Amino acid sequence: MGSHAHYREAHPLVFVITHWINLICMVMLAFSGFYIHFPFFSAGFMGVARGMHFVAMYVILINLVFRIVAAFFVKTANQLETREVDTDIKNWLPQAENKHQLVETLKYYLFFRKEGVISGKYGSLQKIAYLATVPLTFIQAYTGFAIYAPFADASFLAAGTTLVGGPMNMRIIHYFGMWVFILFTMVHAYLANIYNFAPSKIIFLWKETLPEGKH
Amino acid sequence: MAHEGHNALHDLLAVRGVTRRDFLKYCGSIAAALGLSETMAPQIAAALEGAPKLLPTLWLNGGSCSGCTESIAQVDSPDVATIVLDYLSTNYFETIMAAAGEQAEKQLSDTIAAGGYLVIYEGSVMTGQDGNTLLVAGKKGTEILSEAAAGAAAVIAVGSCAVDGGWVYGYPNPAEATGVQAWLNHEGITTPVVNLPSCPVNPEWIVAMVVQLLLVAGGDVATFVEKTEWLTRSYTDRKYGAVDLLMPKGIFGQSIHDNCPRRGHFENGEFVTEFGSKEEAMGYCLYKMGCKGPQTFTNCPIVRWNRRTSWCVEAGSPCIGCGGLNWVDNNAPFFHRLSDMQMGDALGNVQPGTVGAVVGGVAAAALVAHGLGMKAAGRVGDGPPMEEMKAYDRKRLAKKGGDK
Ligand code: HEM
Ligand code: HEM
Ligand code: HEM
Ligand code: SF4
Ligand code: SF4
Image (cartoon, rainbow over all chains, first blue to last red; front, side):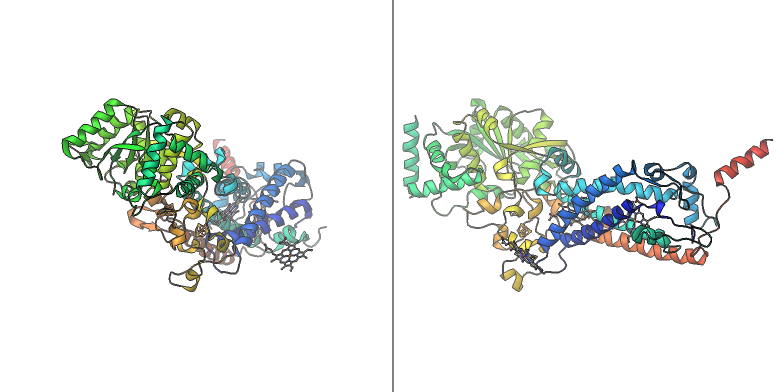
């Protein structure tokens, strides 16, 4: 960690791009979602907000599916400080180094231990969080389509609406889904940048950080 | 036969001073209610004129405020709806029948004995205290419904109370009110139930169902059920579990929001934020005043109310979603966009937005505190010193060492 090396192999350009798309879509979805939830200014914006939401929701889904498929083809660094690569999915899912480390990671973040924890490409918590964004996005898409008139009658969606007690409750779940993403992004952006900004430089600017003596 | 019907209708129209033109116009509005083209009006008129005989009907009241009765009886001038409803020969109707006492109850039992009748049920089914929460003529309301429904050709559940218990079912529901379909499921009675929710029922919808019965089915209920386009809405009753409700698709297939005359203002982001404001006078959208139009599926904006005069949103009120299921719990508070979440006695009723903001705020504060902790622990910058070996492996090694 720390001011250690951050190589491009950790996040090849495709994933820098998918991450940008994710970020932009999420900002668009949360902003337009807030507006749809409660129009906080009146400037002819509802049509735009809904349009924004309806475009971004397809883009983020396509992007997610692409990101998952690409994980099976693109090779990424299997550790943070190496140029050694392996198929991305192996580095995305928990690795051998992550075994037995979840509780230790928790202890570390709760200040119950001093030393940093050995981890795979990402720490155990990080892996859980990154993987969780996948089902969460699909749940958000499901609840979103369930309140979207052109699709709401499809039996696959209508069954869910019945299960939660009607379209009002579905809207509330979709609304809470937004808060889950906001919480994720807060914690994620915090942890990614707490030591220094080297991780952000690589994921946003694709700029390597090379400590003295390395190349 | 058809000829007789024709005469009967003419007499009825004449008595009430309704011209044939008014009548055809009305048939056009029924067509709209049924989701048919207005060009169907002459066929609807023909079906009404040709209706062979009156259909014996029982109008039963359960746990109701009689608002639905009020809704169909609000006529102050000749009205075609009442004429169409005259096709139902109502043998029993607690609120407005002339008969009383034993004579009335005899009409009820005679009609049931004769069979081939229609039941219109208004109000919730009161199952609390073993059914003793509603007694009529010394008999449990639940028993009356079961007996009448078992022998009926069909039941029309009018108004939200009859559909799923309505506001009577609202939490905590001490009378254990439920809907007709839920009760008949429980009793194992399979008579088809047509559900017309909203509080009160729109009389045009009952008329539309009667017309549909005459038009597509020549008065035969089985054909009517088979040939009408239905949609099934399902819900879970707190006492009786999952219930599937049959509703006419032409009436309950589209949201209020999608047919609302204020929709243009919605898209433009022009909202009323306060009653009595300039925005209200300009007829802006009522979304921010808690309009439930986007989540409510009825054709109120098309058919409208009080003989097609106006309806809630047109009259200036946000839709309170009375045509939905479990509508009180799902839509209160009526002037808020989302319903409250019922969080038990300790927390009371809370708006989802409050929950989101509190959780988000706590998380933000926690992160700031954590960041200060990380700084204090000297981890910021280069990160912490790394462990040489996983704690798990250290322990295992130590244990192995001890064993030796
Ligand atoms: C991924 C697929 C998504 C789909 C299909 C979707 C779909 C929808 C739809 C159809 C609406 C209702 C719009 C209207 O009725 O005018 C909506 C509202 C909303 N969406 Fe999404 N959405 C998605 C993702 C997201 C995400 C990721 C967020 C937040 C980060 C979000 C936040 C919201 C919010 C807050 C609302 C307003 C809810 C309310 O208060 O009524 N959505 N969405
Ligand atoms: C800052 C730039 C622009 C703004 C603010 C703008 C704004 C608008 C607005 C407000 C409308 C009416 C939309 C509606 O009524 O729903 C419109 C329609 C339209 N605009 Fe633009 N526009 C811009 C640039 C352009 C450009 C560069 C083009 C074409 C090269 C274009 C082509 C059109 C067309 C074809 C329509 C549809 C007209 C119709 O069929 O009603 N616009 N634009
Ligand atoms: C303020 C916004 C954000 C910042 C500063 C940020 C920063 C970062 C950084 C620095 C990494 C690399 C982590 C590492 O190598 O240690 C990363 C990875 C990742 N981020 Fe973000 N991120 C943001 C928003 C988001 C959002 C909104 C999402 C999705 C909802 C997201 C999902 C991911 C995922 C899944 C990864 C893993 C890498 C990959 O799968 O390609 N991020 N982010
Ligand atoms: S008033 Fe209600 S139903 Fe009409 S457009 Fe606004 S939110 Fe939709
Ligand atoms: S507009 Fe809404 S509140 Fe008014 S009658 Fe129709 S469903 Fe009920």
